[in-house]
View 1 (cartoon, rainbow, N blue to C red):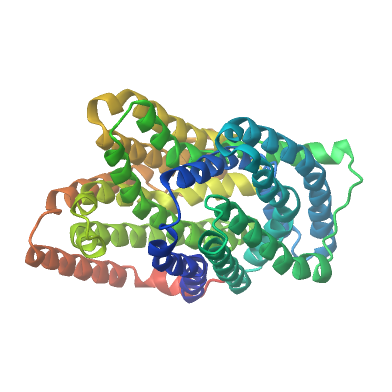
View 2: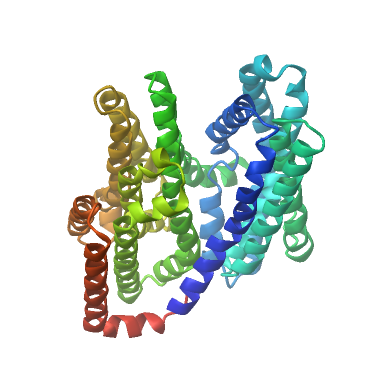
Amino acid sequence: MIKKLFSDSLIYAIGPQLPKLVGIFLLPIITRYLTADDYAIWGLATAYVAALSGLRDLGFTQVLVNFFFRYTANEKRWKIVWRQLMGILSIWGIFYGIILAIVLYLTLHNKVGDNIWSLLFYIVIPAVFFDIISLYGQRFYQFSSKPIPIAISSICSGIISISVNYIAVVHWHVQYMSFFMALFAASLFNALYFFRPVILQQKLLPIFKIRIRRLMPHLKVGLPTIPHTYSAYLLNTSDRVILDIYKQPLHLIGQYNFAYNFGNYAELVGNAIGMAVSPFYTRSYSLRTEDGERQVKIFTFLLQAIFLLGTVLIAIWCREILNALSSNAELAATYPFVIIIIMSYTYRPMYWVPVSRLGFEEKTNHLWKISFIGGLINVVLNMILIPFWGIYAVVVSTFIGLMYIGFSGFYLKAFKKLNSQKYYPMAWLGLILISTVGVMWIRDFSVIGKLSITFGLALLSVFVLWKNRKWIYMLKEMEL
């Protein structure tokens, strides 16, 4: 099971990154033809799309998860529900597209002029017609523990996006429109790629006959997850807006953006592993046994220990890593920010426990108390502290918000009623805090000092694994 976990995580993580590596080498070329205004228009458009994107699936992704695993042996049952939801989402997509078009028109028309109609076409058409097929294809392969088709889709769509962007910028000279053309091309490819498995093979054709009494239970499960999905928006985007509102110097905002790129990579790895382990959590909970819950606990502790060790080792060497990656001394000097941001993403394995359990038990009306409130905490702290601490306020606020998201779920009454295992969330939180303070203390040690600490941590890890080898052997026998 452990071998499959890491292989699946590697596939999920590396697939989307290969095109990005190619894109980095193209930057010196395409940036000759683009201005800051072009990037601003692209950034504003994607920000508004992100603000509305949580409404697109009505939170039905959780319903897809539940019915797939509850009725795995009864293929006809889960397929009917999936088809019904596809019909609902197809009809809702028309209204969603109208809302999206109105918002984009009102906010961007004065910036792009007559190009607004082309821009709306490239954004709204994929949102209405392409995204559903891509969603169904990705979720089907994910729930079936088949990551390779998803990785192929990510790689190919990424390459298509980069190619269209390059051609449109360098040869067609359409500047910011190149971004939207690339988005359209990638979305179209994904829809065509997943059309065969979704429509032709699995025959997941939408059912448009909707009965209110059947719809309401799905909405009760799905809609409460929408605030949950907006936590990422509040945590990852709102800080830049608030920095701009408070008129922070542009170069400081740029430094923060550069530093947060490493947080995005940490989140990417966390999401990749989350996609890989999601079937294990759901199958374990579906057993409805003490052994199933104990498996989740042991597995979570192992993952949390790996996450903590990995982030600590990266954080220790942040100064050297940034000096190697950046020839810009101003950007390389952001390594203290990077340390805190990377350590803030250590929470992921503990976060999966209450979220996956509440989702499986259809207690999704409690999820907003975890993620949405965590995002609000980040926003409020930013508004209070930025005038005093500047960029450091944003970094610390992000850390606090993510720690709340990672551990608050264990204290929800709804989760306590379902849970029978002791996860010691405060002990893990304390360990993360101590580790973060420790790494910040040794961040400027000499290379010899850091090598000694790294070697010591490696020995400690081997000792802990040896002491807990019986649990490792048990995990190896589990099915993912």
